[in-house]
Amino acid sequence: MSVMAAQNGSHLYTLMEEEPSTPYKSQPWMLHVVLHGTMKGEVDDKELHFNMVPYDVRDIKKEVETVFSIPACVQEVEFEFVQLKDTDRVDSIRLQSGDTVFVNYKSEADCESVKVALDWMQLLTCLLQGEVPSVTNPMSFDLNEVIRAGIDDRLMEDLAFQKFSPWTCPVKQTNKMYFVDLGGLDVLMELYSMVQREAWCTSIIEMKFLEASCMCILSNLASSNDLRRLIISKDGVARSIRSFLHVPLKKGFEVVDDSGCPGRPDHNNIILVDVVQSALAILCNVCEMPEIHEELASNSELLRQLLCVSVSPTFEILRAQLVASIFLCCAHSPSVHAHLCRAEVIEGLLEACVYRGAAMEQQSTPIDLMLLKYFTQVFMAQLVLVSPSLLPPSLLEKMHCHMQELLDTADPYELMRFEETCRFSCAVLTKLQSLSIQVTIFCLISSLSRPSHQEIMVDEGLLDYVICMPWYVPGEVKAKADLVVRALAAHKPLQPPSLASIAKAKLAKVHFGLDRVVSMESIHNLFIELYPALYVST
Image 1 (cartoon, rainbow, N blue to C red):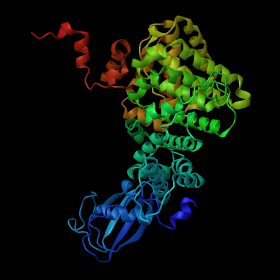
Image 2 (cartoon, helix red, strand yellow):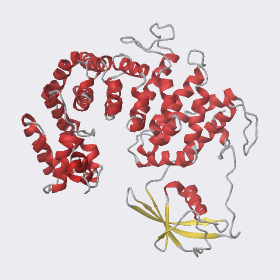
Image 3 (cartoon, one colour):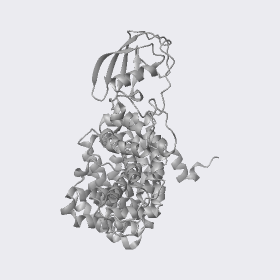
């Protein structure tokens, strides 16, 4: 019997009843509701009927959610031009039957489908823990039947690929917020931990499938920036790494089993590929959070596995791009450069570029290969500019050749949809300093071609520093730095930078680096640090 057939129009798998708010009065009640969808600019007048007077604004939001599929967590309710709080009581704000309230929201959601999947996940978690679930319609549950019903109805697949993806769709974003608001992330992580208890080599195929499904949902949740730190706080990174390392991969081989032999294309290996790819997607999303860079970069087994994925014929070039992106994001934290400047890391990434280039005709397109090289070269430029003394001398010539190739063959405007954070710093190695700065300028030209990226730059207070950049870079790259300013001027009017910004740019170039200078409101303390003798109190 399938989950949908078992429902009979109601949530069979609801584990507990919601505690209702205390009713204010038991009598019919009605509100005029003006629904304002802010994303689409839609306005709709509706009537909302209650069997009893709602106790507070929370009750009104729940009814709007039930009737119009607009989750309570995304609603903003206004009455007489005042935004109401969830705890505002109906009688205290003098809201009466027949009054009009305004409900602002970004997007509606697939509330019913999200609830069905979450109810099944809650039931399954209880059964795996050996607990007897409390349900509205009691019946005996068999663990295997529940698992099979969920798999047959593709509940977790539908949640991951239909309800949470693509991440750019407002409805999908709202679905994710609704899922988390219902406690879905806690249920997901608990279920994930339950199916991870067995070693991969001894786990039954249903548990492997459930693990892959949990990771697929988690990877789509991690595509939302607002949820990444929440996922990190719930041990999502450590669990993903554990899944990623279930079976060691060997360079040049396809999926391998526990004996180290090439795997057969059976269901176990297909699921393993899904697990590896989902783990890679999770890590690629959360690695933008600086607090996990040490956890990733210090794990030598993880780095080895990442590099093996880059040159495995099992995984398409997109996975190699994700690997390079993870290394690039980690490189934004100088504290982990000692782990990243090792020869095996740099040579592994360069080998991936060569391998994918040789297989380009069969597996990829020129833009795919360009993106892989782009991420790899920017990663190397970060290391050269910030931590040149950590780089093995034997690799410098290789890095020089590959960075020069990118600048000679790539078009930054083809990459404008990818945003990279640039770091300006003095380099010791003059041979690579110019190339590394050119790669950084390449990133800026690419990023600043998009209006949204220009807004981010202005919001972060970096506009003046970009305008100052041609004044402070080495002579051989001044012309290219000037291209950044010209590209920016083509999209928006520019003003001369302030004297304070000019001074800060000089201090950043010569002494302190841009991060520290930008974070300080006044440069007075920097001058005290540079010239303490001038500020000795008399």
